Image 1 (cartoon, rainbow, N blue to C red):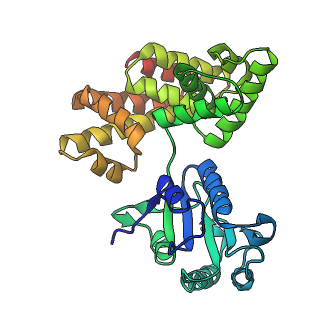
Image 2 (image 1 turned 30 degrees about the vertical axis):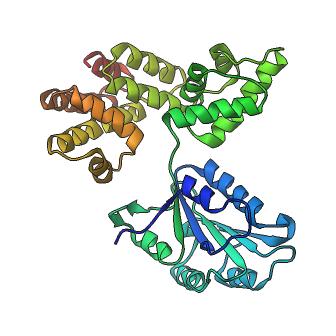
Length: 344
């Protein structure tokens, strides 16, 4: 059975300002982008709640219990037509009997009730499985509420969001600077928001209103995620110079050789899997489902697979395995990593 799942954009369209007429009153948020989950919660409050100080009840993993949830649903809204119940927790926060009671109460809420319930599963805490093979926990919650998936924002959409965030701080940044901000500060939107604010204040304090790459370097904090992404991207492009440059930054930040090599091995193994699927005639959508690789990074793997022979990929796998043995065994430094990169 394939369950209907809303995207973050679908959810925003459903909750346009005004009293909800016939829309579902129960949702659960999951996926990798927590920033957008918080934003969507704010939109729901603005659309439906007259006074958030009185008509919003919040639970987390420490305060939630099925009894407390049931009690919250029994309280009528004080200043509007709806009460919003927000529950932020991980499934692992609940014992099996608590989970069963929680789902039972959730299933009993009708679209005519005076409460709207939004459950937020933080990134990494909820395993949805795949669209054609949903996990057991996904099936249970999807039977009781509407799933809303918040995927990681990447590429042009993320760069556009960065530009708007800069504009909101009364500074401007062109496309290349926005992309550079992501490459330096990472793609996590919560962290990016903070870094963009800091860079913006730095520019304004300098008496200017246009952001440059030098400003990003001066005021932004590089992330390990960004460095690992740069290395992975360079490897998939078979760009030795870019890979060695990314590795130099990671060495300067005292990354562990074993961890760096593990990331490289993962990239090569994923490339081998994507190449095999491609040769079997699978569509990108089918490959994404089979491998778990999201569409944006998959596009890079597909491009690399299309310009690389299976023989070369096998050679890369063998070389990566030898380098991995090296950093774990005889060499505790980056020499095996550098040797692998030079052989790309």
